[in-house]
Amino acid sequence: MIDSISVVGGKDKNGAAEVIPLLNIRAGEILAVVGTTGSGKSMLIADIEQWADGETPSQRRILINQMPAGEFAEDRVLRGMAAEVSQNMNFVMDMSVKDFLHLHACSRHLEQAEMLVEQVLSYANRLSGEPISSQVKLTVLSGGQSRALMVADVALISDAPVVLLDELENAGIDRLAALKGLALQNKIVVLVTHDPMLALLADRRVVMKNGGMFRLHSTTSEEKLLLKRLEQNNRQISFWREQLRLGFTINEEILEQY
Image 1 (cartoon, rainbow, N blue to C red):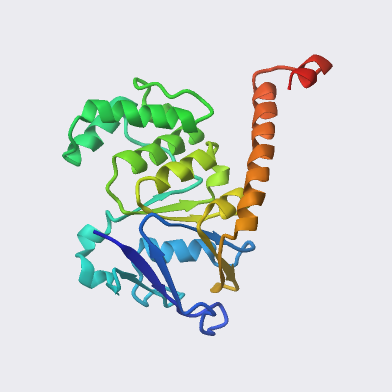
Image 2: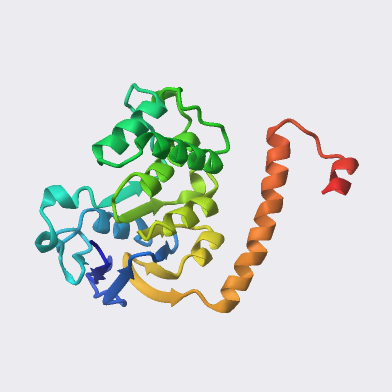
């Protein structure tokens, strides 16, 4: 069981020691990774996914429960302990959504696989802007549908204790619901984001600069109040987005109803 992972700081792009020498992330915690383009956000989650041990360009080391990853488990086991959902992903397996989920649930030796498949589909459809049928082939799913299905699968079927999300705001899904759902499963969630709502929904955020961990902030009570305002604005934007997607025009009557 993973209670925590730790990122032991390495070097930034100039070869200087990272400002943050040690970053501990607990099970059930959401950590946002923020920073400008090219600041090293994707490299950080790549180091975690690879369970780096000083061999990557950043020279970081990843610890599991305060011990080197290689001592915690074999490479074969480590490969299944971190699940990544990226902004660019699609399925290549030629089978139905239901068959894929059932196969995955059975391979994990999970009880009540049929019920679990229905739960995953229900969750995926709450995240996706387009309905996902259980009988549709994986290969014809849109990008947003694919990512919604993968988030739901990772949350409810996968036993990977660490979930890595790369720019969830570009995934075409309900990003806030996805993040909250993953956090409820007591997983370690690390997400790269430019979205202020996702950054503030996280428990903490690490700021990347010039390839290194530069600042570490806990979300303050004032920031949580700001998040509520942003969520309200987001609901308004989502409403109008859906109206336009469904082919409506915005007239005085609709404005008055809203």
